[in-house]
Image 1 (cartoon, one colour):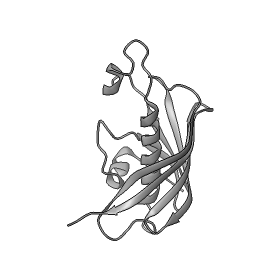
Image 2 (tube, rainbow, N blue to C red; image 1 turned 30 degrees about the vertical axis):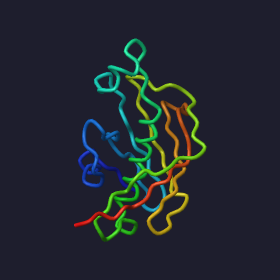
Image 3 (cartoon, one colour; image 1 turned 120 degrees about the vertical axis):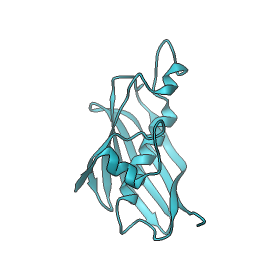
Image 4 (cartoon, rainbow, N blue to C red; image 1 turned 90 degrees about the horizontal axis):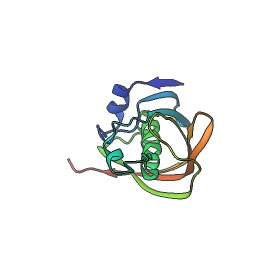
Length: 149
């Protein structure tokens, strides 16, 4: 089990502000599961339009944060990371449910567990919580796309 700072996350993921949605990893069990945190701040650029009078963290960005947590789980594990230069792309979702709005001041706890890794495709069971309340859940699919040198 390990933890990761935002700098260690950026060593694994290509995402940068304003599109990096992980602030820290509080638990990473390589080859199995990860728990990460995202602090939701009113300063984030999308809140100027979503929605100005009642800011709500967009559901698709909750899914992106879960995909980034899944990517950090895989890319931080030398046994799962491919040898060739690749991107780990978010390619699909199933059975997604949003249970509560996420608003500025909330802290999202992002949980992802590998349900299957086969060659370049990973399937993940994911859930996002605020406090102990489920905010969103679903199954995510991500795959490695080899990059040209």
